[in-house]
Length: 296
Ligand code: RIB
Image (tube, rainbow, N blue to C red; front, top):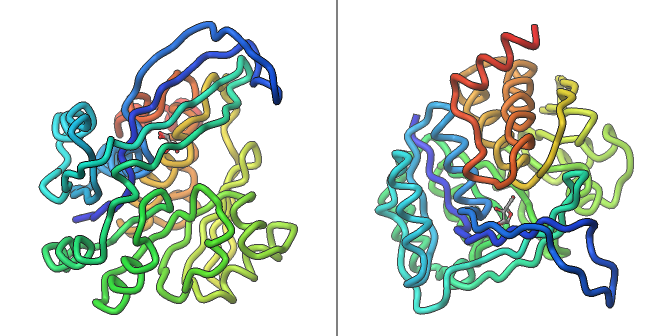
């Protein structure tokens, strides 16, 4: 299975806080770590660990070797990554003892993507089984429309949410994968069923909605399938959605029935949240299988 992940590559600067700071509050942090991250990088790794051959596209600056080296070391094809004169993207992540977080994103090189770059990437990888994207890079709308017109299957994770996401042409999206907040914000609806129906009416073919502690649900206009979340001791939820995305989509594309695909995604993200960091804590396939066996 050949997957093209077009997305962001960030250096994650993680600060362990006694609590998330209030407006105007100055706080000492209790620990500081640097990790590889970015939704594109995290989802690429999750897809690869699930079992796919993954090619990544996007941009990093001269300071991005830490990220590209990590991807390459983990068996990901980085030949599609272009360099930019901008700094590599980075994220300042504050986590609290309950595992909640808040982030400041610096887009940097991720926002330097041009239509010309997109055309070159798609021309090289028209044979991909899926193009997966998020919303941290520039040119996402263009990439979605071009890929769709070329007949490449698309999966879109509209994250992080900004109002411009209401104006995307969702008929170019084969699989939409998003959380409850993103679903409610895009549609203006409340309640899982209404959100799913409204998203389908926008034109997507299949929808996977994650519901935090309530698990996840799959909907294609006919079948609705849901799966509960696993209860674990979460210390850092950064990257949980990305881990779910890679594993769940891999299963769906492999022909696994949606309920099992959701379950595998939930298991992978349940493991991921028990450690600090995003990309480095995405589990390998054997750990996910073991977790699922132990849970039976
Ligand atoms: O989804 C988690 C990711 O969001 C982090 O790795 C951070 O870089 C931001 O892109």
